[in-house]
Amino acid sequence: MENMKSKIGVLLKGVKDEWKALLVVVFCNIVSAFAVMYFTLPYRFPDTGVTGLAVLSNYVFGISPSWGIFFGNMLLLWWGYSNLNLRFLGLTVCSIIVFSVAMPIFRIFPSLPLPNDRFMAAILSGILRGMASAMIFRVGGSGGGTDIIAMVLRRRRGWEVGRFSIYINLVILAMSLSVVGLESVVYGVVCLYVFGVTLDNAMHSFDRRKQAFIITNIPDEVSHFITSKGKGVTIIDGRGGFTGESRQMLISLLEPRHVLELKTFLREKDPKSFVSICDASEVVGQGFKSWTNALN
Image (cartoon, rainbow, N blue to C red; front, side, top):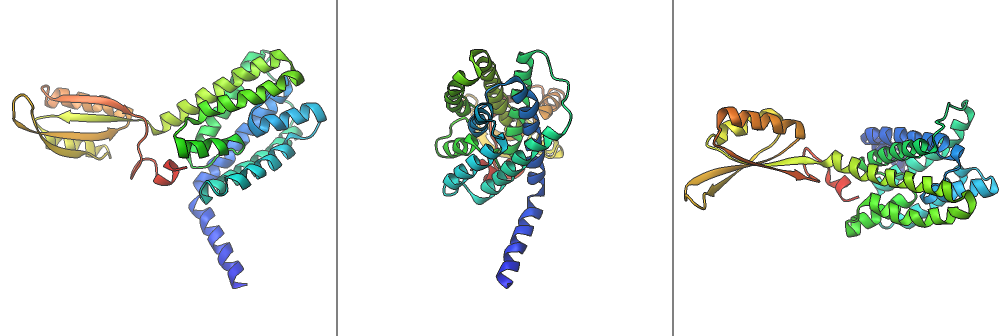
């Protein structure tokens, strides 16, 4: 009895600590289910991953796709259990349950007015699901299916998740050709491409920062300006290669909106300063992405 209470206590503590991530997972899977029910199935588009196989079974055998999605994902979770951390798997289980439950619930609601343009429907489906998947990845989970395989390969080999999704799902789309026809498969490819591009760009935009290298005659003032924006700065002692003079170089990681403010400050306070701005595609550490999410 005490052991059971202890386990329940650990579970409740985990839910309390991760409530923000769970909220994101729930919301994003509802959005994904909405996209499938209103922008995929009504147009008889093929889909991708485990969802794609479940949609095919629906077209051919009339089986509810929620069942195929649930059991197919459970098999992949069993495979991924030994390769991914428990937090990732816990959030993924939440994704699978919410997505599988939300799909039949949407069938209860009256049909919404759908776009007459199938191309527009494919674009909307790709954008909605790409953004939803990116937000789920951002909090350290996944939508299940081939996302589990993609995250394993990302962790081991550093592969881009969206690019991997395009490759593996082309095989599933090819399987759909004899079921839905060439035209629908072409729209499915459009949806897949938009999904992959949206996913990668959204994930990069979440993590992207500007890395600033600054050489100035007023390092203390510049340092104070940067820290006043809530950003850290590191000062490194250096020496000019041509003049031989001792100089200090400042390094800081800024949000894009702060870069213009920094350049305006330097133009007014030290017009002879030197600044180099470059993109930092991913920043891990205190104040940025956590190491837990970085290693998923």
